[in-house]
Image 1: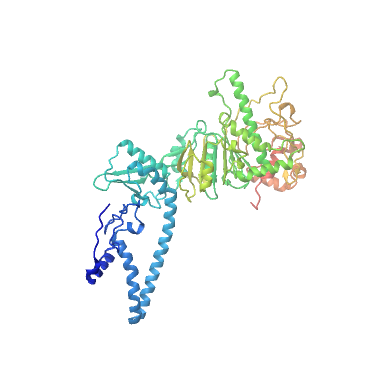
Image 2: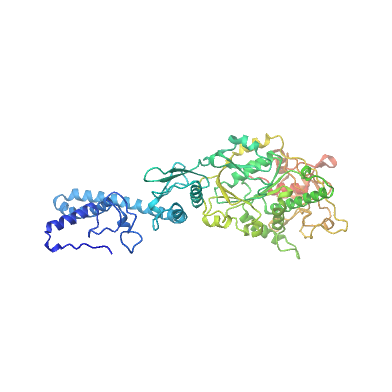
Length: 626
């Protein structure tokens, strides 16, 4: 037990007592003379000198000069103000007003900073402290702020640095240093760091900086060599740390991509980047866009099918699923005949771009409820077809890019369908959205407000990426200047099995021979129902083979022209598309690149068109109102 000195203050002159009190007050020492920490006049206290306390109070942790400054700051104005009001009131009011304004501004800044630091400490600094302090050998009871200096802009400014103070006797080997680097990287969600170890002298420490971040803007045309060098199955998405290219191999890593971004995050820019690379390499792009105008650059580009109306989206999803079934039948035949699958030409890659999935899935369900005949299944065949595409996409070279603001399991038709997306791209995400979609990467990296700055998450790792940006004009010129846009596809449609059994369970879908409208949604016309959902032996008479086709100027999947009913333009404007006048149709045929080509000529030299093509054009045609 320490020996306490007892001083008889009754015999000590009062002037000595007053001098001792003033000295303690000015020097910042405790007024009773009993130290509570190891703080000095210039050094901050780190240990408590009271046996039953683990750490000193915040006041006793302050160095002596700071405690003295706080005392003087409150005492001097309090004592001098009454005298000043008596001697010089105007000057006193002015000085007190300036002092009050300054203290108010300083207090506001301190309060705001304290709130920011509180959030920083709770989310980042304390978790790092709990994992790191015992590894580097810091003493028990030390506070995170005593040895961790984490700036607020560490995640956004690569010029800033973080400092980690080490114990005086620290002399870690290479393995320990690797552990420290791994802990800092994982706890701060910074995948690429540069650590500078300074162990000389009595204050060893680590300086932590980020590696060079992705560029603020990645222009598409500036990275053409990287784009041309990328394989057919791995389109370049953007640029990451150190200027490294970021891509996802759709054949070996992830056949489908999930994109979750709020408004303004760059969804359309990302889809444009993927689509133009697919088109340049001879791929086929099917866009389902309820907003109708998300991709203006696609107008007149061959190799693209743009579906805007919900009935068109419904039918397009079924056709893509049917094409997948056809390709699997071709693969099966090749296996049975001993053909090397590496040399088998299934056709071009198909990219199904599903915009605004949160609203589209609801609309598909509502559309099917309106047109569903009695006795048919309750689940929308389009949602079922989307699930089939997700489960079979890799071998059939069919890839889904699903986009939404918050990609819940319901927005994709179920949790099992969402699990088909191995690659997930997020931007402007909330903490809850990150936890729902990629809980294996924790804590979540800071979200950026910058458009096009995304996190590409694959195999449990997040890669900060700046998405490639191309203007609409650049995208069109680059695609149209390519050597191939879409390739003709040798189609081998499988025949029905010998026993006459259908390839799948039949589903009745309403058809409309004259293109009439059912309620507010166009009816499903012949040719839009795929064999994936109707057996070949149960097809309605006159139904054409389920094949994709492209807009004017493209060469897509060959179609059987004899099964679809043909019609002249005058008759079509009277009975098939009565909302379009003959003059408007003739003018559109000259000006509109999406107007269908005539199939043949009838009696008298009149051009004949497919009914399905005219209905599609009338449904999606551009109007002056946008």
